[in-house]
Amino acid sequence: MGKIRIFVDSSDELGGQQYKYIAEKSVEDLGLGGSIDSIDMLIRVEEPVFIIVIRYKEVTGKSTLGDASYIDSRKNGIRITLSSEIFLGDALKALWSKYGRDRVEQIGRLEIFVSGADPEEVKGIRLSEKGYDLESRINELATRIIPEGFRVRNSLKKRGMITIIASEDPIKESWRELAARLEGDSHA
Amino acid sequence: MLKYLLFEGGLYKHERILEFLEDVGGFLVQKTVVGLDLIMNLAVPEEENERLSAIVSELKGKLTPAPLIGTEIGVVAPTLSRHHLPHPACDIAENLRRHGAKTNIIGLSRGVGQKIVHTTMKEKELIEEHDIAVFTLGNFEKCLMKKTKLFSEIEVPVIVTGGPLMKSIPGAEAYVGGIGRYPERARTGESIEKLREVSRVAGEVVEQRRREMDLDPLIVDPIIVKAEIERQVPESTEALSPNPVTLKIDGVRVKLPYDDYKDKIGGIIIGDKKLSDFALIKRSLMRNYILVKVLPKSMF
Image (tube, rainbow over all chains, first blue to last red; front, side):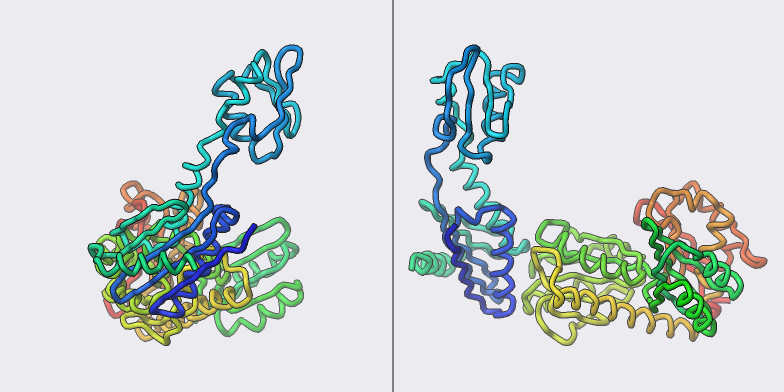
């Protein structure tokens, strides 16, 4: 797991430091440590505006059961051996919805037996929409960090990056410029 | 004057303390049994303190002064969202309870922001049902200064906690800095020390309020009202709410439905008077409970 870079530029220094701590703990709470590259925050309490830029690794692939497990045919069905326990919940959910609970049996910690299923068909089953899932968790992270009173929000999504400008007033053009500059800085 | 003490020790022979309290005119405010451990909130006449200490040391227990016993404190968070709860509001409330207070957590509907922030009349009344209010605010000094209108009109003493290390904040009795918005349970020695400081400051505020009340004392000490309610209306001790007859500085909160029990509570005889003759009995905004406020002697 790479180290997450968290940068805060705040007009209130002590409050800014606290937000760094809040960001660290929120990442930890949501289990996003491996997916986030950097979090940059710009806080100007007197305006008031709070800008946050989160850069994250977009997850692609590994979304089908075939990618996440080894599948072999047995007499009455197939045996699925998962490569990691983290796929277990999603795999069971997907198999149950396709074959019903009667035909799916978990026979070991990583092994699932499905009676009367076709291996090729099982390989193509999607575990979950991982990409979408990560994005919603990144949004959740931003919402947890941004002070609750800053309810007027403007968000901008680019590939692997989300920028949110939050304030109590309508978003000003100058804040968009600040956000763009912060996005540029977060590249460095 | 009664002195409030917290006893921590074992169940073994604790009846000796209860007998002593009965003999000297002290009171048991609350008793909590956890396995073989026992925590008791006691009220003892000041002059009997030494004799009680002797009994407690014989029983190998621990006795600590706890001015927060017999107080009901409202811990007010700006909202009920995850930004402000459970940390730090619950940490502060827990520490206050460790020092003997009964706490209620209140989440405001619009306690956030610099512009929309305000307390409604109903919220103000609800907060004023408590003896003290502790407001848990955020990390930025500028924001805190704009939020003083949350508590400036509240008539009970207010303690404010926040991130900035200021000495005081306008409109509040006291301010404790270094406890702003934080996202995990207070675990470090430093943060727990801050929580203790809130309890210590609350204790000082309570003692100050009790001293002021001594100038014009209540007709009957609320602790006697509590004991009589529990004796004459046994249903009050059977209510499922925690601490069904909660002791407050100037009265009690009885956790029974107002409409069904107001006459029964008002009709309780203490000395040769009915409770309703020397106390205000009103409906609480909290779940229709009954609030009893004992009047001071100057009112008669």
